[in-house]
Image (tube, rainbow, N blue to C red):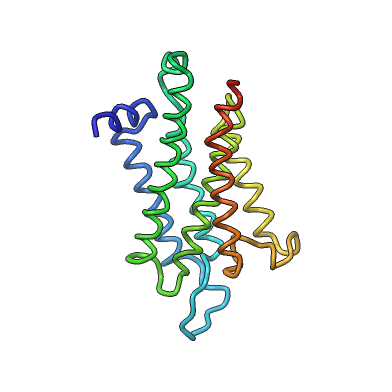
Length: 199
């Protein structure tokens, strides 16, 4: 636990960051429960994906966690680069797993009844993987680049007519398996990119 605590501090994880992340997840819950009415308020019990407002609210916890991928002690990066990159990859995987665990738990206890838990967690994992890959691809302004990448993907999949429904990973619940595969591939790429750049 001491090692995890030291690694967390290197990435700027402190009480203020934890409060920010908690607040971001609270906004997701509020957006899901008290936001705009459902597009298809069918009284029949069936699972459904997040509505648009909830999906956009997911940007907040994603960006909060992406902000904790940067090492805030530049001298560390010059010490044993191979070990640092493996540590970074492990930290990214830990962030990914924590986010999936949080949204799965929220889907069970706090989100509205009927939200597809597997799809909701997949949406978070997919958005986090895009943001982490964008952050890994840029050494400067990585947070801003991640935000732009996320906003572009969300806009393409939210604005009507830009994508066929069958290709809309965020809102089409039938694409859950593809969503998870893409999230895993993009996260693996984000973990590998810094190592490949150093070679």
